Length: 434
Image 1 (cartoon, rainbow, N blue to C red):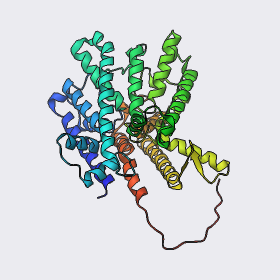
Image 2 (cartoon, rainbow, N blue to C red):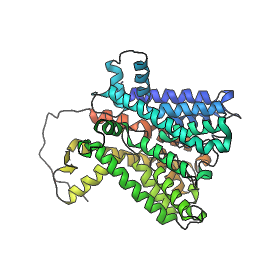
Image 3 (tube, helix red, strand yellow):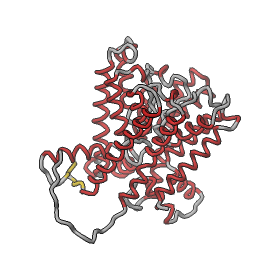
Image 4 (cartoon, helix red, strand yellow):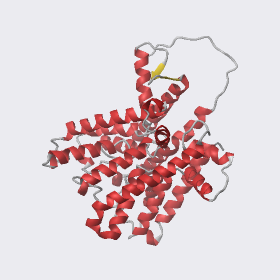
């Protein structure tokens, strides 16, 4: 079996183990079905955040701990975790684990893989520890030292891994006006969504922009533009909506909610307002942001920011009749452009098939269904309240989409990396397009 298939199988095994753990008597405060357990485990391992049982009331403290472990393993990556264990035990990392690690981290070569794993460990420890300490200042006064610290740890893990799970029944809506929560949580999931390769590059080159790799420059610039655009659009579309931003009298609080909800849409899936009350235009914009997602080798899903940027650049180059694609003084090869086209095409097909299948098997509002499928594929976790209404076929389809959204690019990467040399060269033909 090729490495991507092995990794997909390992994720499937982890999901099964998680489902069994959630069925243990001490994991829940009330009995849950196998369907509930399997859906929750799939959502956790794929760091999505869609829920069919209330995390804060149905899952016990032990159940929430199991959920946090599933989120951490899913976000960190199974092979990354395995290599960290081997390194901690002082055991050598052989060729086969490095092959699996390369696929898990979506890398094209095995060069500096172990150094990248070291960077991942440092980034995870620093951000999650700092996030937990800072969030404790908001949660401890409300819940006391014990539960306050636990809520801070859980939300730090969930935020950095872009999972979107919350131990609070209404999510982070009660903290929509809390400046600390509105700063720390977004910084955590933005950092987690940038990708470990970006951090490795930044740590190595410090603040020298000219020395950053093309990937890092595209990720940083693309993320900044998407954040500015999405925050402005959410504020513009929802400012006077009495069910969302308009529910707050203070312009500062409205701006905070617009900031939080705009930046969480591509990656994390937390909410500080009622997602079901958003205008249809805002929901459609959210769908596009969820499909774009975060960065490669990150805890985010979607087609990735670099894929989206290269697709836009390729489109501009076509209309300008350019034969070479360039960005930041570097050229982008044809093979990468073809990979972008393949990733985008397969992603669009998967989303459309998912929307069609759930629409055919389940009665519901079309926008709710499309929003749910986009959220599952992008492993975001936002919902317009449709998750709890899913029937069994609908749940199975959403679970499949979450799984493919998390491990699908790995399998696709294997087929894209398989090169065949044609033995026959055919004359060029003319095809009328557009």
